Image 1 (cartoon, rainbow, N blue to C red):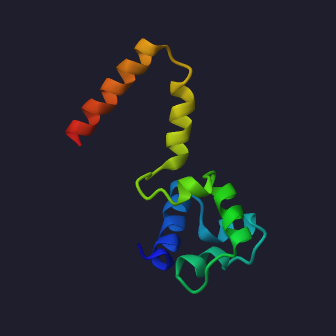
Image 2 (cartoon, helix red, strand yellow):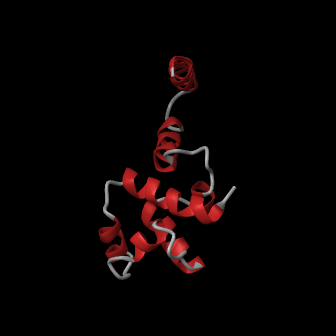
Length: 105
């Protein structure tokens, strides 16, 4: 995997899911208004500290950030928390619904 290309794309993907502009995210991180734009346009990469702040802002763990198969890790984590509140039969029902949706997709 070409991480130098993928990391900026992943930041843009997760930022867009939060419906926040690159400028607003930059300012929320305490950076210049072009900080995220420069990262997403591959002019720079964040430092490790910057990366951790980006993950925190995006509400993803570093592990979730690098899980290319997780298109919406924030929603997956929230869904898991809600599933853990259900009874075993309710969980089985939800699992069957998810399977059905996957077969139709």
